[in-house]
Amino acid sequence: MTETTDARDSATAWRPSAIELERRAFRKRQTGRSVLVSALSTIVLAGLLAWALIGSPGWAQVQQTFFDPTVALASLPRILEGLWLNIQVLVAASIGVVVFALVLATLRTLRGPVFFPLRALAAGYTDLFRGVPLIIVLYLIGYGVPGLDFFPRMPVAFWGTIALILTYSAYVSEVFRAGIEAVHPSQRLAARSLGLSHGQTMRRIVLPQAFRKVTPALMNDFVAMQKDVGLISVLGAVDAVRAAQIETAHYFNFTPYVVAGLLFVLLAWPMIRLTDWVSARTRAREQVGSIV
Image 1: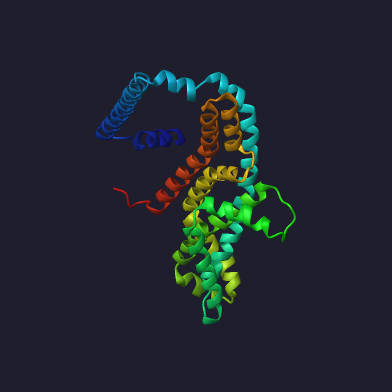
Image 2 (image 1 turned 60 degrees about the vertical axis):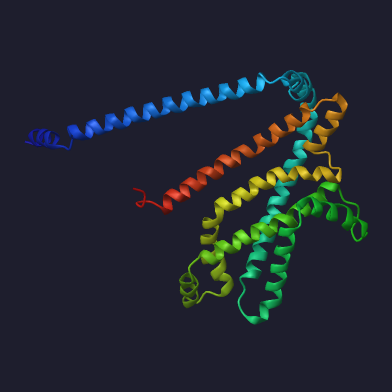
């Protein structure tokens, strides 16, 4: 009896219709065709660019000056040593930017007339450091602050890190503030009605939602800072950029700059891909069911 029932169930189990099978086959053919066309168009475009570049009259001189493999291998160890300094500065600056920017964003979202001086101070800070170019901040902090003799002698990388924190915290604080203000006021009202204080509401209710909303923008700022960390070389720090400059002067060849640029690309590429993935995932989650 059981075997008969199982056989009947298997016979009546759902199976795709002929029309559905035809649709699936059509989608499969379309996908394969799209992949083939994309690959061919990419190969053709790459070939045209290579032909235009290599066929230019000055390509031989440019290749010798910018793409010399011997110079690249010889300068790579020193540039890698300088890149390690960039990574150290990047990690320290990232932590400092997140903490300081969160404080600034919190100050700008305080309510009540008694907090007006703090709001005005935070607003003036963000306006100032978003308007001044980073390289000028580096000069002012790296040469001006040590000249006051308020602090003991510190490495130039330390002052470069401070300049990065001061500049990027102004941008990131606005990202945080946008995320905080994007949280619906009913969330705060519900939390306060349950007896949570303002600080508990911000820490447990508002900030977790704000972080999720602004994560892609924060990651983009981090990618931008990965490039700008190379500007600490203007203070004399022997990072990847300064090491490339030294090697360029040594070999009288610009290949070390290309090596340094490629290393910065490799440093930023994982974060760029992660940012794109997080952005796509967030967009798919928020727009589920709305895409026709």
